[in-house]
Length: 438
Ligand code: SDX
Image (cartoon, rainbow, N blue to C red; front, side, top):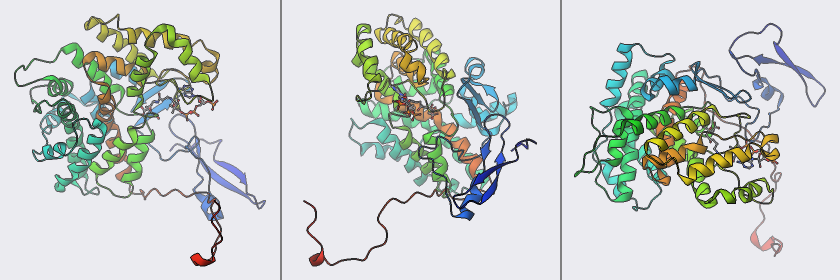
């Protein structure tokens, strides 16, 4: 934390009239935070359901300015990383804090390539699922099960264990994700090929079949790699906070990542990309857009414009803009520029951004609004969209888990509550209880 001379303390008047001084913590950039930890000495908690005003930790990995639409990974703007870097290099950056030199990059990339296989017995886990299981249900199961195969890397206090667990998880997520897809369509699993790059290898495992081993399309592989970059990390979002919470108990990294996958699944979070495509398909025709905009604005109607709005971005999500450009590139490459869903998405965006409701509530397209159209054009089925998000976000989850675990001051995360239940009362035998209200 940095010291700013003019804002050292916040003075708070307590309910009993006493005033206390609370230190103000400053980051290198962005909002400061009042350190409320001393409040518990006064028998008081803060209350912040949904954590709208709570900094749960100090972190040096990712910075977001929601008002300006800024997203930095270790200081590098997401637009520059998406344009000039690749996912493996972004993984190195998130984990180690700086862009690698050539030797470090080659060594890291070699390690990832040589950890892509999974234990053959993991295949038995897949056989226990119905073929039509949602792939996220399978991912929750098989990723958590990895801890049963790597007893040599579960000691979270050992930095070598942490390093090898990070490599294994980043390397094996594409293999497991592709296995989910292959299992769901009754195709044989496809083994990774060490000669292929990360995104190429994933597309190879997704779409190769024993009788036709085509090389992945380089435009699709580049688009896939960029989608991975755009989903890699996003500060203390719900799934990353879940991973930190699980990790604070000392749980092993595989179990922590499985908890992140579970949290990401929800439609308010990583499940939104799947929900966006279903919404665009339901709208079906640009002529129906106004009807759905009205539904999204109707307080009585639970319908929301999926892929719109964000807890932090009150401006354009910078990832959405890169995603829209990538969407255009992929649709052009696949000769689908006339894709009706893309047209509906662009019309929807255009109309919503001129509508007072969305303007007043600062609702802009987020990372999920265009990603589904790209994934669909690449040939990935809708129910695999959130799996792709989890695959990419694994590096962010691990980076935050490592940052927390390697902090010697780390302690278990254990929030308190405002209790609203009954005060103490004695047990009464059933024969003495009054008739339960009918
Ligand atoms: C991700 O946290 C992260 O960083 C997440 C993420 C990441 O990379 O990890 O960026 C990935 O999860 C992106 C978000 C994907 N989710 C969606 O696209 C689902 C649709 N969006 C919403 O459900 C909503 O916008 C949230 C969940 C994203 C944010 O919700 P908040 O911050 O709790 O905001 P809110 O629900 O309090 O909404 C504020 C107002 C409300 O109206 P009022 O009560 O003030 O009258 O805006 C309205 C909401 O009704 N609103 C919407 C809307 N989103 C918010 N109205 C219509 N359509 C929407 N999409």
